[in-house]
Figure 1 (tube, rainbow, N blue to C red):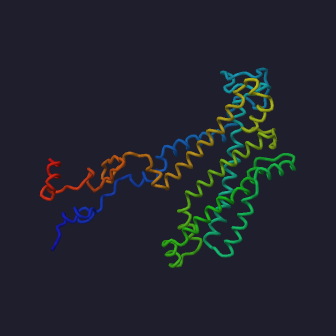
Figure 2: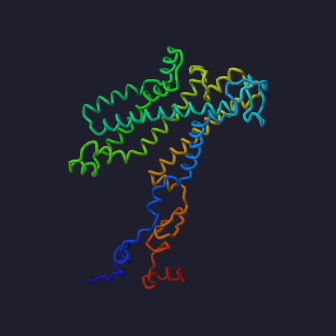
Figure 3: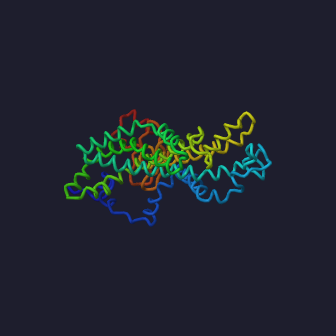
Length: 356
């Protein structure tokens, strides 16, 4: 018996006449490229981070006053002349915050880049090659995993007369890659036996090409998450070292501002404007990086991306409202079908009366 095309389309959605390829919608592929930016967390975090990067670049040039310049306006609250108030020496706090943005961003991103490059090289190499290479690199990762970064920086900076921001970034980057490397190794071990990796290996693809074009695209989210985590750790480490007086107080960063505010008893004097702006700058930077990290997780995980949504959009443009105990059956039509249509003759008398 030959089944009509219309019946085939009704029984198996997507077959028969409905299997005809849809005409490509213009601009759809272009919208897919910017799908990540549609996430509100990602857009909000990137906007805030963009301001920090901008201030890090032009901040020292647009400061209204010299951060080290003294004046007769001692411990003055925020005003039109001094937006964030002044210190005990009459120094402008707003200028200090702007000037201190560059070292924080520089150390954070440089340390994150160094740690990410090392973790990618060591983690993927250990996970993909295996054998003695894996054992050696895993042992190296375990050694660096137990090295405390902040005490090591305290020891090194105490030996040297003055520790530059570059040296601090190198120390943080060289001691913060091991955890991300272990995560990448575990993910690589899970991916290297997948069918597409085995197929690429069977066709004679070179190792560097398999790693670069098959493994790395699937590890992008893990790498980005590790980078952001390292940036946050590096920023907090620099501020901690400056706050406890390890880093030279000659240059300005947010930790140096907090160091002088704590040393001069700003809280006891009621000079909240001395330490609150620097604290808010740290909080907003951490919030921006965390939002970007959350957005990356949602971008690569459909379950997280749809969490909390009560309405889902079908491929045909219709909308289905999700409810507890309700499972919609979607088709290619604009309207969702919530239950099958039963012929009245197939119903029991009680069901027939209820249907009426």
